[in-house]
Length: 70
Image (cartoon, rainbow, N blue to C red; front, side, top):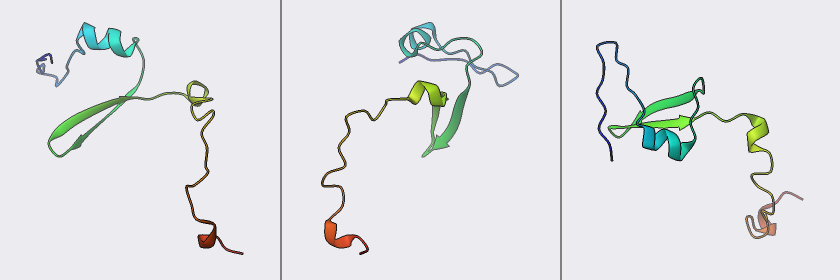
């Protein structure tokens, strides 16, 4: 865990170890939100980057056949 300082303009620098681990590049966009007093930061990925993310996923057993409309 690394501490960062908030500048007078409310800016923070993402520590190098985290940038390297997450492979964050200059100009990339992130979403920041607060939940239960914790600030979360999530990198926005393009649709092209998400292609194939669910490859091999099975939908068997997710929903009972009796729940479906006939």
